[in-house]
Length: 337
Image (tube, rainbow, N blue to C red; front, side, top):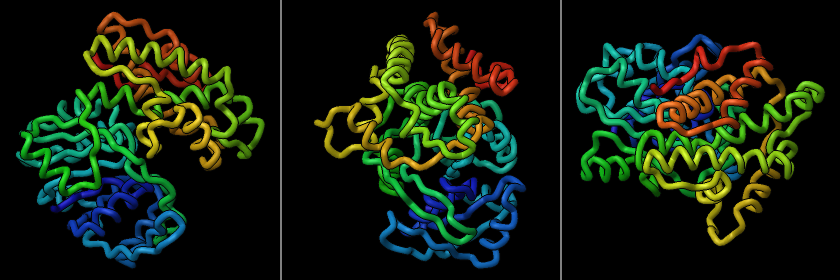
């Protein structure tokens, strides 16, 4: 299939590499002026190395890489959007003139982002939304990427797909183990909305004091903070119940994604994952608040208001995170009304 990967950061280069290794034709689309020197190096070399879990190096030959939306979008079968969710509104506007009926918009991850795209894209499109990435890793240099983790299981939501369409997409993608009920089912199971926001907010002074010597997953999730996550889970599950979606705790959902052996204790799986997590964040001015609060928590709060479900924990995090950064997250947030 012809994929256009929008975004040349960690998620884009890693997933684009595996699509290339599967034999798909992949075009990379750079959307911003950030890290332009690294992008120019990729354009010049037309290849990069993916280190697979510190074991094997794979040379990825780039089919096409561009900054032209028209060039990247017009012939794509799948438009695979890997930017942060904060960019989804802008991306939707910029691809709107070039999309055509039948194309697939793949959102990884999504905070009910299909609804953002549907405001700006009038063509008959199909959507696939993911609650998280398939692979995690980091760019080490302009031409080298390290893959450090693969989720054991992946959930997605399909919109405007026939059963045959779904099977064809699954055959040409990495893996999809579970179909979630709706865009909101995907959004409310996005793990970043929970652990990033609670962990950073309740570690704010430690992050600033440590001046970069901070490990969120190793340090933040003490027994008291886990109590907060469980209280948050009650709000989330009350909302899922009203939306007629399956209820699931954060820790059980994390085990399902991350652990082969589902008989293990969910909290122990989380602790084991935490021990292997990387350092950071080193500042409060980070996407863990600046993305996951407005795109995730504001969405959740607005859904709660719409369906009459109280969300005091989520609402408190929005207010306190906004006070920390002097930002009105509700004003700029992903409001579903």
